[in-house]
Image (cartoon, rainbow, N blue to C red):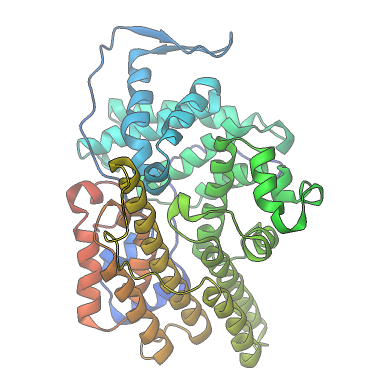
Length: 445
């Protein structure tokens, strides 16, 4: 089980470390720091906020203990629902915009989720005007830290996993996002991810208690539809995403790896691409590769690394990536829409774009695997081939807001190639996000 005791962090800043393969090659090839820094970035665009009368007062409507909310706080909550949510979770929102209302309602019914949302959105508003860490003593940053202290206090009171609820988990995820938006200076973000992990570890789908009651051929989809609401499904999938990407960042085995092997490997049907654009089997392969990287480092430290065993383990992971089926090339995108309504056509376009995003993750997943097996050596043919496949997958996908979900593949491919054209193209994908896309995080450094 995840940790049952936690300290209450006092800083909103946290540093996300680059994986060893990226970091080492960046050092040896003097890769553009824009690409290296992009791994630490959650890209967020900017839209002007709607002013609200700051003198008005509002009350949340979901319980007698709910504190009185000022107009400023309501402004932030509505800004989150109308603007920030679709930027924070762009793919999930594009597939089902009701997630913004679900998370808004959760903030109105949970103290922790409320102040987690306020922390994130208040920080976002500072970025709207180009503010940064140097503004730490400004009135707005004082407000952010005030909200942060409230959410930290709420979460610190939940000293046992059984005390946590969905609002606490979502609050923790908001803090992780806030840390990433900030650009990062230390690793306290991991404590908040542990809180979210502690919550979902209790769920029957995650601990597999509910599976025996469902037919073996459809256990996952049955369990997910009968034992959880939409918000809980979203939280579980988002925690899974952060757990896997966090394992890449921290060079460790994902906490729920055994669960992913069952859910994403033998079962399928989790529709993970609807959250971040990454197919669940690709996500499983990335998780397995992170575990392989951790195993390799441990064996190297002991002086007992068996290269043949390493290669064999890599082949098994590559088989997972191959099992995802043929790569979708986007052909016939408009030809077979038939007599669909405009809304149906737009939904189909979004779904096909997500499939193209998933192609990028699959190519990048194979590249990540080769860097773990072969090391940080851009001249290795498997790495060259994987970089080319990643660039090709990007070229089929038109540059858009979806690129905010693809900072990891851009960074990985950019750092693992000596091809100047590839690097220029990948850096160009970041630059196409423009000032708005680079205003949050540190990819512009």
